[in-house]
Amino acid sequence: MRSNRFSQQFGISTFGESHGPAIGLLIDSPPPNLDFPSDELAAALRQRSQRGDFSTPRQEPDQLEILSGVFEGKTTGMPLCVIVRNCDAKSADYAALKDIFRPGHADYSWFQKYQIFDYRGGGRASGRESLARVIAADLSKNLLQDIKIEITSTQIGEMKAGAAASPAGDNPFHWPDPDSYPDLIKYLDEIKDSGDSLGGILQVRASNIPAGLGDPIYEKLSANIAKAMFSIGTVRGILFGDGLDLAHRPGSQCNDQFEDGKLASNHHGGIVGGVSNGQDLVFELIIRPISSISIPQEGMDKAGNPRQISIQGRHDVCHLPRLIPVVEAMLQICLADAIQYQRLVLGLDADLPSFRESLDKVDEELLTLLWRRREIVRQVKQYKLQNDLPPKDPSREREILSKAAKLAQEMDLPPELVQDIIKLNLRISDT
Figure 1 (cartoon, rainbow, N blue to C red):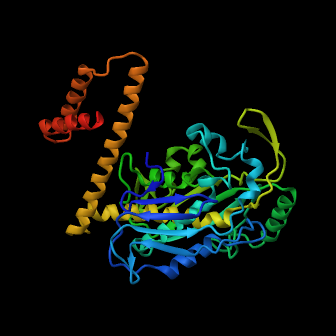
Figure 2: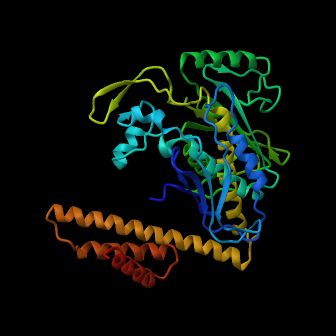
Figure 3: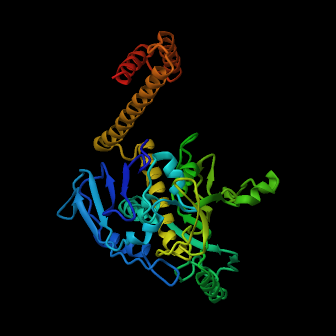
């Protein structure tokens, strides 16, 4: 399963752990002859790593290092690989926790999956990996043109913002209420002194969104945005448009009606039927607190014994200032992907290199599916061997070929050729 890859159009893969040598990004087929935005990327990384009284004191320079795909300041069209070295990781802070599953962390669930976990700062589950997302977003933002994204903290912990004086507020938390901002800082100081942490609610608004983005049924824009947001470790919920209020109102108060040739409201947040309708894209994100706190908690060691722990590493009290650039980055990538695909649908990129790039990506996905099928078949063979079942089932193969022929007819594909492909697929899976 390619769980470290995102974006159908750009083929973005990320790698690296919090306390490993580096965090990196690979784009397998970037457009050639584009100016590589070194200065813009440096600025984007500074925004992501902004520090304050309530963020981790870890000091990383975040210097970009280009390994391939750029020559004389321009992309070559070859795989683009960039890394950022980890320079201030202090793994000794976590030595006492190497055999302990920490509450709220990915340690236990990842250990159940892989039978190993990187306890040093959370490994790949750390927010440190998000800097690769910021780099990827900056490399694709030229497709967004005049799309504007604004992110506001409407709630932090139990404290809610009042009437907004500006969309985001001129402060690290994007707190929109200047009157209550001093109270917010006091509240955060109290949480910091207690050794605890806070999450909150972010409101995201993107304007100048073109209509027609997203593809029913399983590639809806809302579904892909939700997937992008849930890939961020501390996001625990997403609500589009009026959110929970839609569950309480009758349909007459939820439908966006038309007046004078345009929509008169935006209850659904700019997406209907999974496709953008040209209105502002609006959604809220529910953000849980950072799990690493110094308050004693009940953990468990690998032997199943209870262990009380108090995490003493360098951690955020409230990580929203550093999370906001990541949320913006993931939305940028999602929108850039949808825009690029829509251009192909409308024939706006009707040139041979664009068509070939799209075909190459489809072929790559086909090969990935072939590999996945072969891995499952190997598991089936092992299961049959352990349960003394015959290795071959001719009736099952006939059933597969019959289903393929019927599906081919429904999709207006030649059934005989499709069956030949399935036969080759069965041979590959048997290798």
